[in-house]
Length: 192
Figure 1 (cartoon, rainbow, N blue to C red):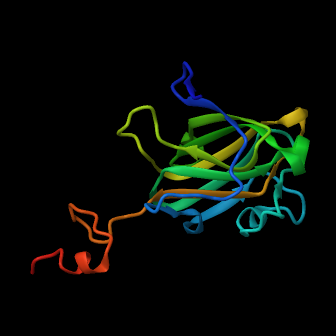
Figure 2: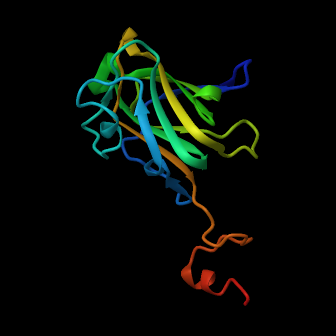
């Protein structure tokens, strides 16, 4: 259950996780349009392990907490969902227990969007970026930062196996009031 803290960001607790990644059709993966960086990593366990679609590999941080994953876009994008794959059964004390998601134009003005506590997660963890207001369904940003604040069992370094960021799929025809899905409807939707 998510509760709102006094500072305005949303805080929640997540138990478990899904073994299969399930998404709505109106979302698209935005991570390939970004430049990814991490605050630290062990040799061979860097950013490429986060994005390789392989659940056997992982990013391993190296150093003091918080451990950061920075996702920077060339232009402002709408982001709606962050999905992480973590596995307490395999990683134990390396598994994150508290994660903060921040958004902004760059490093100088990041604001916390969401804080989540993870209780022995194993699988895909879905972190919605929508606010408490139903009109706030996405975050419009140049940069997203995922911070691992603490780990299970007071672990020092973190393992994250995959990270994906999703935004709303744009309407194929700009200024079109209706969102047609079939090719035939889209073909005949404009009057010349």
